[in-house]
Image (cartoon, rainbow, N blue to C red; front, side, top):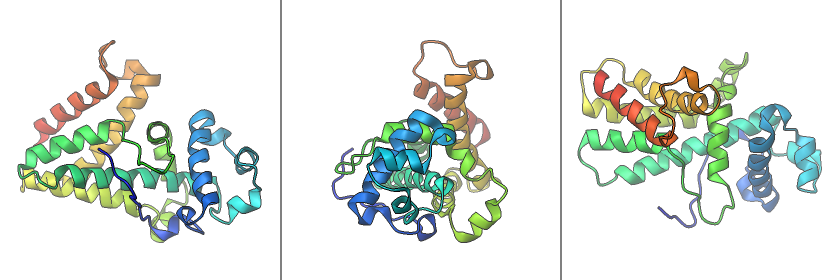
Length: 223
């Protein structure tokens, strides 16, 4: 899958200034992904980023209030890209179960890079697996939600829930199952890599294939 000139429009609450509008902003996004992938969000600071891109902390603060907001922006960017890929993949698919299988495959695997952005989508996916829960597991989650900072995630969940209802209109928990698919895919990949005894991952199998197989079996049993 290749796309040119694709622009992902994110909710304006995610930034003070849209980083896509300037070369500095785009550089900040690219390099923050590389640095958070290397150091984790705990080891990442605006000071380190500023030194790395040969800029100033003040310039970064013109785009984001703090590193938590930057992390939320990056995670939501991935959710927006995933939603676009799901819509693209399913645009000519009529069978609901095939749509849902496509969704599971896309949720559980790496995304293609978007041409022209310079963003390492594999690194961003690793950040999503390791750090995504931190954007909402915070004491100020309600405040952030009211500001619209989780719009991309909720939109993605509702898109998946709609396909679940196409598969089984009487299923009573479509939103819960949609979020379970998204959260379980990340949890299982994280556990396979760091806490394998918490999974049933067979050594030697492709990690993504294992997660897809697990999710497909879980969804079949529920629907």
